[in-house]
Length: 79
Image (tube, rainbow, N blue to C red):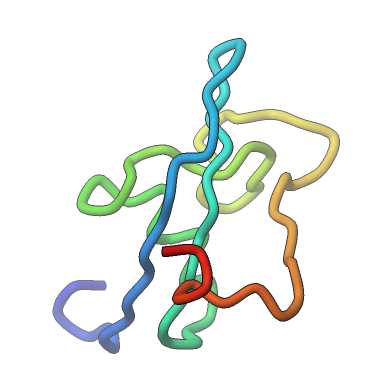
């Protein structure tokens, strides 16, 4: 909700594209509920939902949601 939502920031990096799928590393700078899912799916974000996201996926059917966390990987280290 652009009128009532709280600010949130996510940066990203496209890692690879293959077979019509894109691997993206997401770096949330804030910790809002569903932040990464919304930023991927929303037209003002990446406009591409996470594969298998049952809420924001708009028909990206998959047996599960393809969102994975990597501990201790800091955005600044990858620059």
